Image 1: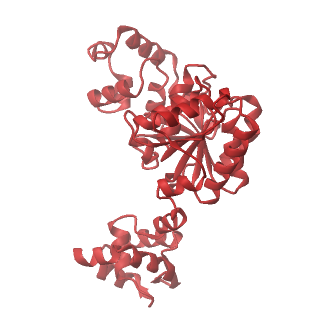
Image 2: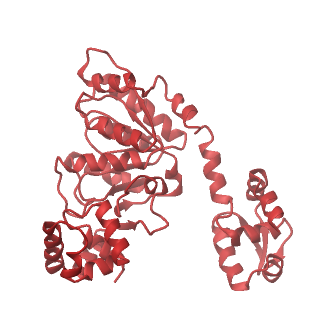
Image 3: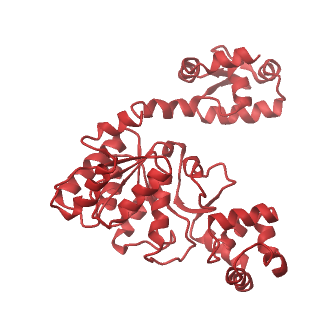
Length: 379
């Protein structure tokens, strides 16, 4: 059984959030050791007695094999702090969620993401602005992140998809419980070109207390948060506050001073948020004007020292794998595995049996990045 099941099991325990999860893992070594720790050992950890008892009760009542089968039958992807695929921007915040549940997928393209949030009671003006902002971001290769709520969130997700872009919906429920129910179709579409994400266990129903925690993930996944319309008690303001605490940029769309849907957004501007007057302001402020080029470069630039060594010795003349290994000073099995991956990434091409060349477009990006010169200097 996959070791991540112990992460999932601990995530079922009320009272063990990211801070306590980290402390327990630091003390016992890994989630499995926490899960299997004797009651006496758990009682010395500093956990409140009620939380210790909750952990022991969950441990008595949960069948790990059934729990794992549940995740598999729902086609859930699990990501933990230890997984390379865990979103790196989210990992940078204080106390990131120990485990994420995904339907769909998060890719490196989602490193360039902006949250678009706002009121459920959106006005025609707010709808128009949300469509303009989300559509512009999607067409420029920026992933749109929101919370799948009615109003601005739904408009942002749908517009991003219609524009051919990617979008991520962060839920305040389990990823198998779509809320609101009328967004089930939208949620299904999102999984095809983005992801549904939650740190809540499967089956978790909607609850008022879940959504502030959800908002923290929305901002954590994003370079910036844009508030379209928000009343004075809107959850979008919580997302903006988290974004500011996480060191991310906050933008707000100015609205009529008498409109209740604009009071929160206008107040954000008064307190220092960037007024968003045109979507182009986002690309300029966040240095996202070259997103597509940056994404292409990430695909073709070497991902590690092995790829870099191979790419340095290759040119446009076919080279046998044995010669590549000899010049790169790498064992042949390592070279073979790396070349297979590099071919999938479009970095190299196979020109005959065991003969490889550097892809011209990849080599051009590599040379322009300055990476080649750095490799030469390190020899």
